[in-house]
Image 1: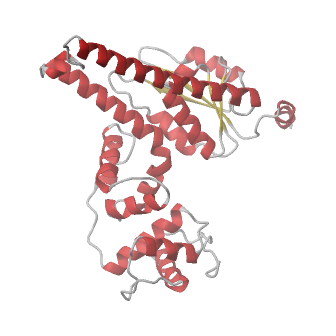
Image 2 (image 1 turned 180 degrees about the vertical axis):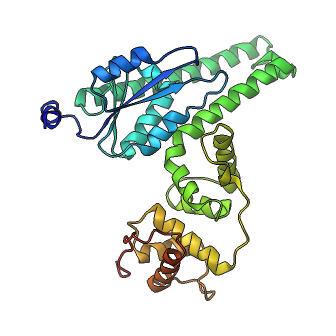
Length: 316
């Protein structure tokens, strides 16, 4: 009761306050961050330790996947959460999409308040300006180098020096890992539900219907990276078993339904037509009743939980 009263008084969301404490190496400790997070009345504290050259953050990825609407992610400082301004903005965008919030104890960033949102907008504008200035300086430097008869770029890379190429490869891998982790909470749950029963092609098509631009090859590569960093189950990479055409349709419809239970039967039928999927009888036009038959089969085979009663009216 006291906590509810305090929440109303401070106008904070009444979800959980989830603290995130991170240090860069295993030799460091999160104790000082934990003390501040407990003082901020966090209900739960997630700890993350760095691991040398690896930039993976499995604890943060799991936190972003599990956090719910109304919850608030709390950190002591912004640099404990994000490696860059763009990474910070990506994380906050993911939280906002889930109805969750973000607060930094030592920085003026709190997405539950108008002042905090204004500070975040200023931060975004600064990041955009910084990118524009870097781009302009780079172009000016290239023009000046050409005027002096010099070639732009890293001489070590141009000359194919092994140490320079190794550094470039490491930087590219780190940047790729950042991009995968920043968006994993948006698409990895669908992959987990559909693999290995479904092919990468089927999953990429389902994700594309939900606004995610994946090819089967890029999707498999991203999951392979997560598995290598111990952030996803190796079973996701198993070879898909051969399936009869109708069995494949059952798992495909089940994947669409579970990914978005609010879709009506008619909306699922429209998605199947946009995917150019043929009906069990080989037709191109899908009816709500055909979709319902496949969903019923998916329930009987356990692809959809039996207590899932989210099937919508066929005429909606």
